[in-house]
Structure formats: structure tokens, C-alpha cells
Image 1 (cartoon, one colour):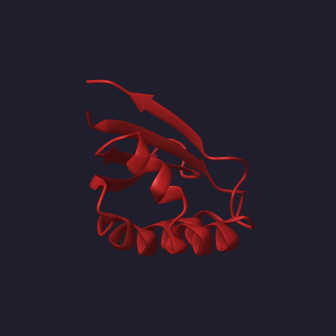
Image 2: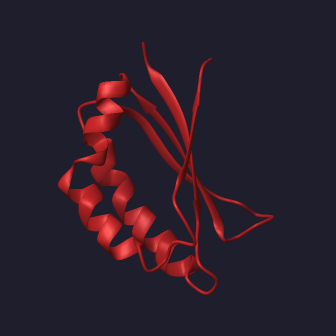
Length: 94
């Protein structure tokens, strides 16, 4: 069964552009992952420091494998200076 996820990502004040650019560069790499069915980035118009990643994975194992991908680890190193806190994952059923 496919797994739908919304990731809420908040930028530190003043780092919105860096985070948006980093996330935008990440999107095409993630879309190439075998377990990725959908991966789309949104930025809140009301709260420009908030980004929402809508994700659809083949299953929980695919999402777990995603976290271990080299491009995710590299992004994590860059983003640690841009993030206001941990990414909030919301898993939903349709």
C-alpha cells in the first residue's frame, strides 16, 4: 500500500531563499528514487519560512530507504544551518 507524507520544513529567519534553493535542487534527485511515486515542493504564501513537501512512496520501506540516500545525507549537512528545527512528517491515508 502506498504511503502519503507531508513534510513540514521551517527555515531559520533569513535563510528562506537558501532552503528553497536547496529543496528545489533536491526534488529531481528524489524523484529518481525507485520507491518515489510523487515528490512536490510548496512554499506557504502566509508563512514564507514554511515549506511543504508532498510525497508519495511505494511503502514505508521506500520512505526509510529515502532517508539513507546519499543526496539526502548531503542535503542534511547543508540544511542544518538553514533549518529552524526538525522536519515534521505527517503520514496520511487516503
